[in-house]
Length: 259
Image 1 (cartoon, rainbow, N blue to C red):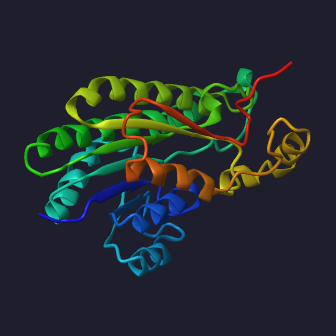
Image 2 (cartoon, helix red, strand yellow):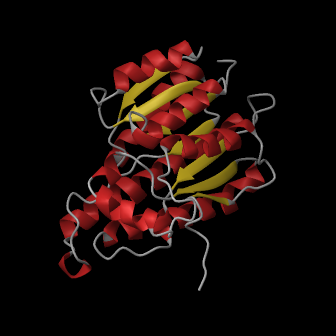
């Protein structure tokens, strides 16, 4: 059995997922990097960067919405390492097209919900069962699960309703797993990013520039993937081991309400 802790990170090839992957590798975890395809942009260079940090790199191609694929993926991870110490559910997509709520299609709803909510729910379920089993097999085993959600879990955007619904649902999934697993010795957290500079937000940069400049984001700057990654690394490191179920918002003060 592998002696180093092992982290499984979905949506690892770019953006927030890539930054999280490198931050966790720097914490001396071996890395299982999951992306929709092994040919995903940035996957090859990510492996080089992870290995420079002294961590093993195991890339896996998986569409997280393919729930029938989960068993084989988890088996492959355990065959290689014999353990999973950290799961970071980061994979997620925006709607292919922003439409008014009254024009929301079932096709777009199903796509977003399957990737952002259904997939992470059932992937976590499978890994959580293995973590419970591993508790009796590994000395000083301290498994953790982290869900990357969004401020859209609580802030409505009527031109991407399916995304907001998926993130609100994922926030509840995090609470449910925290309630179910904390007594099993598995800590569960939610990290809720705000307006982060990624490919996903690049399409609406002008809109968000205006929101930031007007002071809705109190710190008046874009969030960076590294901001989210530092929060995840802190959780993985054990800085918040008495805070299972907590929500950590990384939004530059967007959470502050005032009149």
